[in-house]
Image (cartoon, rainbow, N blue to C red; front, side):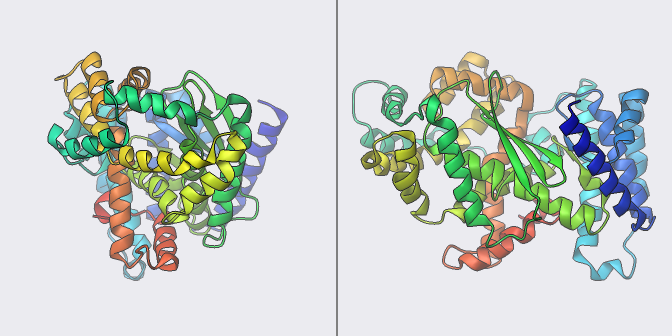
Length: 433
């Protein structure tokens, strides 16, 4: 442990201890503590399960020492669900208190599902996504994507397979490696500038960016607590100009970094809800986290504002031709509409009706992924399985929820208001449908 990390850990523990002194011991707070410890216990069997934890360090140490068997974790989670008390009279007047109970119950049910999977249980793609993420993505046949592919074919004429024409077209929009940090820094700064007028963040919030290799994902936010994040960008494959805003918004502002900071401020520190010091990746919380992170791009850059910023700022920073920005944006808009093709590839692959080669071919044909990128995506399926629904279905559900409450494109202030309210709440996916 470096001195900087040690200093941060001491500061986090001190802050948590001070806050805990003013938090009353209630049945729900006891339930929450038991929940956190069970999540940490599952993490001893599944290295990917605990995405973030910034609660008392001794809880993690105790989980490592005890290493509870999976059957004992499952039994304890079952008892804990039964122990969740009903709302008191005072709590009935607090919407978040009701959401808290629903959240803990559903998170524990998902935990039990993950434990059963670790024990060898087999679920279909849809059964798994419902049990883990509280949602099932729609099924789309090949015909669903046909019209979009025809339109893309018109934009990219030629005799070669469409995916090859698309890949050749994109070569002009790769960010040179020696300009990558410069472009990302400009994108992050703009995303933050657009977010801060609408979101009251703690004064000491910050994040660090690292460039890494040999990962199954393109970007990742590792939340550290104390309003800090480590954001990693995978450079295994070429990074295209549109990914700068995608990753800066999704991983940073107003995406994962803002989401986690608001949960820490409003739920952990202000209310003493310790359950939000831990984030189990394979849980309903992930659909809200990924859905808000993807929809946040549209909130921060409404209408044509993203295309204009990329053309005027990011293209010159990357040394790319700004005159081509409009053409690239039109193509990418169409390709983005093919997002659900990735779900279909994952569904057939994980259900065993398609092997890796067949899934890779599908991704190339219907999701416009090069063979190399498609193969990388199947490795994502291997590790994260039905998690893929959280990106596209999550975005659609969040968008629908915000707009149903008046946060439409013509009311940007209301859209930000409803979006931020969702970020700072324990609302479940079933609660945004």
